[in-house]
Amino acid sequence: MAGARASVRAPVCHRRGRPALPAPPERSGCLVTDTSLRTAASHRSLLDRLRAWHSAETPNPAKRVQFDAPLTPWLFLLPQLAVVVVFFYWPSVQAVTSSFYLEDPFGFGATFVGTDNYTDALQSSQYASTALFTAFFCLVVTALSLGLGLLLAVKADKVIRGASSYKTLLISVYAIAPPVAGLIGMMIFDLHIGPLTDLAAFFGYDLQVGINYWDTAIALITISVWKQIPYNFIFFLSGLQSVPVSVREAALIDARSGWRRFRDVTLPLLAPTAFFLLVINITYAMFDTFPIIDVVVKDKPANNPITLVYKVYLDGFKGNDIGGSSAQSVILMVVVAALTVLQFRFLERRVHYG
Image 1 (spheres, helix red, strand yellow):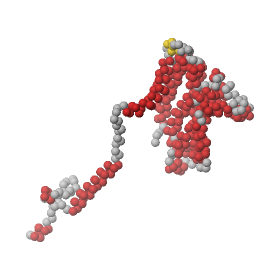
Image 2 (image 1 turned 60 degrees about the vertical axis):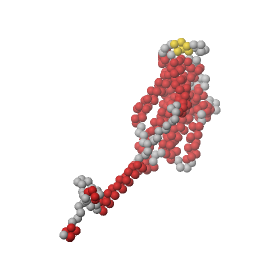
Image 3 (image 1 turned 180 degrees about the horizontal axis):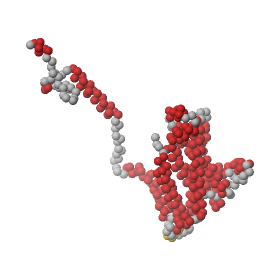
Image 4 (image 1 turned 45 degrees about the horizontal axis):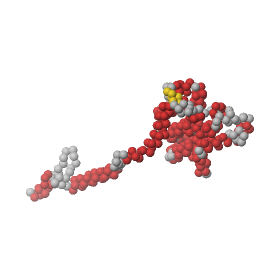
């Protein structure tokens, strides 16, 4: 009987579909083995490690900044809001309001004329020719500035010796103010001492900037492009230097031709930068070239090409036609808004970020 009792093994409790877990001997009436204890302990330690890892990997949510007074955040925003209201919204409202009136040149009153100012501007042959030249000017300046800036950036990215001097020489032009750039351009295109005028005369062409319409247009385009190239160069060079080395090495293996590598690999990676610079360059050509045009054209706008922005200035401040000038500025604002919507709705779809 003693041997029979010794040969009987104590039962171990197992639940169907679940691993054996140790139970207190007093309640279950089952003996607990060392293997089940070690298994349960390993399970608990594994779960504890997983919970600790998950809590360490999960970032804490950002805490919202709380202000004691509800007016405090508005006080931080007040300077920027004041600048926007004073220098954008207020002039815009004044321009829209003045466009429906015929202002007295001496400031004694104004007469409501409805949409006559808009009709006169849109039916004017001079306004139509100015608008055509503005479109041509913006297209040429944007294309040349982007193209030459990208070309110089690609070449600068490959320079090994003297790279800093090369980049400094190109970027230094950006520090020149637009009126100073226009003055330098007038010295270069001067009828008597201009080196480009002498170069044109060497090839048998009489370059007359300020007298001939298209000669003046060439001078305006040249000076505007020269002034904008460094800006595009800086951004394109930064975009090229951000391309990973592994991508360049893979492109070098896949395509031996430098043009194919640039077209298939580099140019798609530069698409976000190129789209940003496209918007900036169109804005620059339409508005920021005003000082250059003012210096080159001087007091002879009748025989020289001008843009719509400069025509607004001439009619408003030189011709004292406040109503007509305001109507032209409103038309220009609508055109710029339409171009912006067109760029961001259709061109940005072809740009892939990251």
